[in-house]
Image (cartoon, rainbow, N blue to C red; front, side):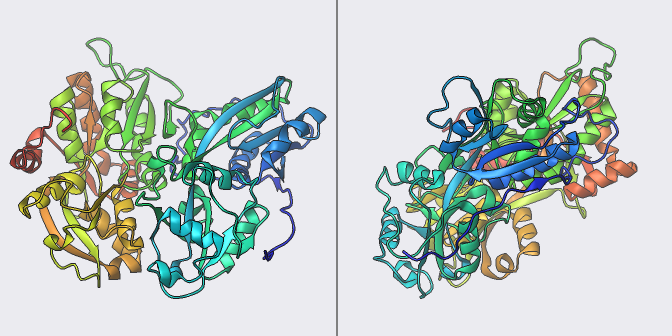
Length: 573
């Protein structure tokens, strides 16, 4: 086994500030953390090398706010309990759950989940492999990408030692314990060196954190494995992607700064920071979240009794894009609601469109920005009411489109029969439309295709086509246009086969329990955003010129399509 790099990652003093994306600088925003006296010494943190990259970013933000300094010392998770008991460090950040030997006297706070995926260099030309092919690559039996449908060229395997948490997670999940060590390739002793190797080696295949890849810290193309797409929603459910837990470990009498850090990791601000890094908070009750608050709660109390807007008003957004882009788009609107109505407003990033149904039915959200199909289900089942939707350049509606990659020989929807297809469940563009097209082509759903892949967002469905993991996909045309405007590959490679009728753009809908007076106040505030400076800025972040009124009658085309294919709106088929 050759060694490509040598050396260890040095600890770093983290003292610089990190801006919170999308939160703005409203004077009404409440800081979640209560300042405590600055520590008189540097706080030393031992961190698993896999957890270190995201934790450094979190520590930078926290340290700048608290006037503290941290020294991050990379190590293995298994070594952290002994370092804590010896007093060598003040806390540890572990990967893979509570390490063996933690025992009594230590407190453990799980704060985030990440997903471990296989990835390959872009020039390899591969987007999907089987577990058997990966096993043969690591055994050195497949040494050329052309053998697995990629571009001819050598396969350079980037591996990690068996002690690596990422490796163990993949081995136990996807390979059921039978994941061979690379017999030809490059053994990287820690995460940082593995990343350096993947940035340098052409034609590499390796594994890494999904958060690192999606935030641009790690290069490469995420690989589907055995038909399972590289999407976070699959983490921990079927072995791929593999899920890894990050946790904070400390002694019972830890310094005040460490206890404050634990509180920060479990706060709305901490969850927001995790979301911007592509991580999911470990809390079982919340997904990627942030909080946009006022100093006073309950200041919006119209005459006529108790208002649902007194206290915290929770707004959910569906995963039309990844959480980072959705945060950037909707955070300012959420802040305007908080400032305009005098309430605490909380923005919740949901992992799937269907989760909106559960959040509303269980009373965890008061409103949501949703597409037409989910709105129809919410309206029929829970009497949810639409208020307003964005308009840009006179456009406030969208179409569903079927896209394929250029040069595949697929020229019509009928050509997709027996092919791999990606769709976005519970969306008009991503599910209702392709269901109708399959029926029109004389097939059934999903049997018309050889394989169907559930994508959590329209952007993810586009990525599956571009990577080669899917032969076609159904997506929202507005999302496709945004992707093509920002990506030369998407602009040149994607071809539209079919287009649907028009559906209303994602509208803000509210729970039926919200009184008419409150609905009217919220609607008026949204419709007047384009009349004020802060409102125009918030609309600009959303990519809109203004908000326009929206009623149930605007969804006629969606209802008609659902009736045409006999899709039940009040129950799941």
